Length: 318
Image (cartoon, rainbow, N blue to C red; front, side, top):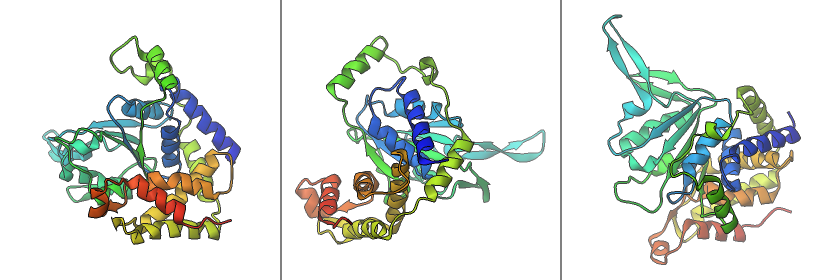
């Protein structure tokens, strides 16, 4: 598989999603990069911006198993992972698998469940395996978490711990649509008040496990020049030295940014990375991995402002 084939397949996936979703190009790019890099994506946006819909349609465009968890305050780890139940007919415990045993997992409103249940996903996201009653169970190699959260309503929510946020490749922020897009949304969906399933829009899977394996293998083999490696490292290290931050990004962030840049280049039909790939992907890669200092919070600064300042101040390789 070559960059042109991958770019064509990515366009086919987008075309399927666009049967139901208007706009959202940046969100689709984030999901595609996550898919090609074994990464997980956290989507944040106000209610009604199609976060859940785009995740469902994206999954429907892939020939992969789909699972969904609606996170609530009373959700327990066993509701996510599964539990061993005694089978009287067999006189032994039998594992009843939870929704985590899938390939594309939609973790809807992930910040509405307590930390104990959030932590149930940590091992799954990092190691593609879960431990239940002392026994390890492997998950699919295609396992990917697409999580959503609402930034406005804070009552009854539990902020994700830094350890879990660091497992996400991107924190993608969904903004309000443009006027033209919003008009098209009303034309397409204004006749109903409930969410229609992707099947109703005729969304068909256009890529399967074999395609995904071939695309990931190609992305991994793309060479990242040493000058661009230095650029990635300099960006990450600058977050640890910025006076407006209490904590900067981890070494994992450097690996993820480099991997994401490779995937983004391929989606653009290139077999090489350019500095603009890294600059474009730095905000969604870093915004959830840095902690503002008390002074920055008092001044009302946002993580994106700090990241933009770091990008502007870090020398770009020529």
